[in-house]
Image (cartoon, rainbow, N blue to C red; front, side, top):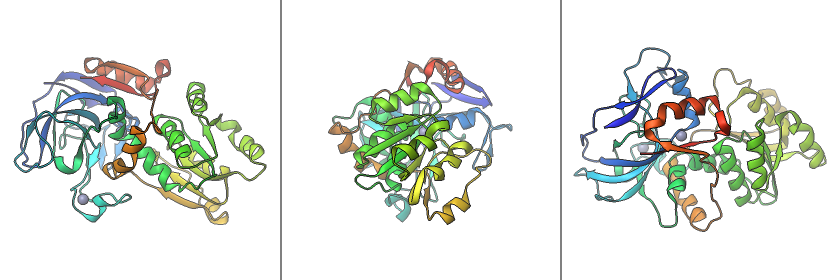
Length: 347
Ligand SMILES: [Zn+2]
Ligand SMILES: [Zn+2]
């Protein structure tokens, strides 16, 4: 088969890769139909360190990608919920499916693993992929959920929901979203659904601010955010802040936007030092939440919101191309060329 394969920093190639075969009884083989690049894929692309793996060092070539949907083409003997021909969403990462952490909204399984980080669990930016623990990792694409929305459910929308729900927005709250990548923009939609009366959307990129403004947010450049929010709220500031970038400057901005006793929820993966403002947290009685989403645990909340049209996720996929153009897709996504927000590959 053909797949996108990591050979080293800034070297992802579309090339032949061994066909996955069914090696686990609780797995299925999917024929991937659509897949997308995630901001976190760029950490691999840059040769950063993720967990114990340093991607700038020699690592065996592996197939990347953790955001994909597809059709079941082969079913292991211990799979009970899926059959050949089912159209399914795969969680970008999954655990054992049975432990307490797997079943909780907040916990993450100690056996949790993500697709496309090594040769251990092949990625889904490929024509075919084996999905272990299929019964707890997959979901049939529900009626009324588009393919675009299904791909968003593999990670971005689940992560946004996890982060926004952890900010514990109450009806009428003033909310700020820092970082308007796909997750931040989805966070704007979710904040309103959760009852925010005002959503301030903060990002240095003009086009992203415009997109947030179209969703009803008050869009602000980071340089003006603190002063503008103070003025617009008559010095009361925000009740909740959702941080979705992981950049040091964004993390440092968060406490300055919050009222005394407010909540901050962080989901951006920090790279390098964070400058985490502990003093401000202490002296201003701030509540801080952080973490990585248990993706499958978010689906039950999100499906009805998508089906009823309360959450749309429109405009998140700014670019579409065939998987065969994946090398160029990664290059332009990394370079943020042409206003790229998120790239969808047709397989
Ligand atoms: Zn992702
Ligand atoms: Zn588990």
